[in-house]
Length: 117
Image (cartoon, rainbow, N blue to C red; front, side, top):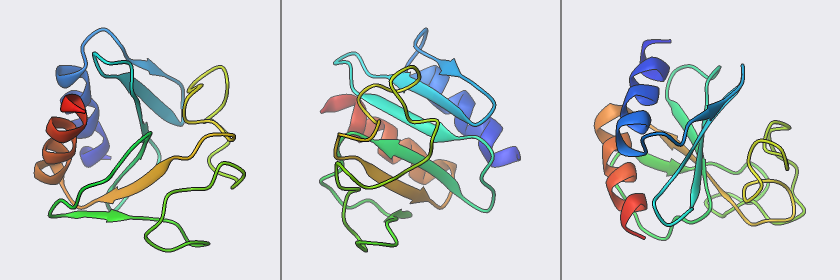
């Protein structure tokens, strides 16, 4: 889980004092209030949920088995930890993006882009 721990470090550094975590996810918020949630138990890559993703970055792939390369629809099921208590803007009822991120360098690109929108 080295990538996950490195990802948590990068997200905490970029979005200080906003971390809320449980066993399965860690949520952070930008200065503009946009949420980003890291799936803590996934391996092989870094997996995050975002409110918006309208760019292309090296090492980043949009994941959605039902609708490839598209955001999750408002009614589409997702990680059960994305709920009113943990992530109100990423819960069902909202369109969200699920990203697979190859490595920490690609995560830094996402963080820098997301922090500015």
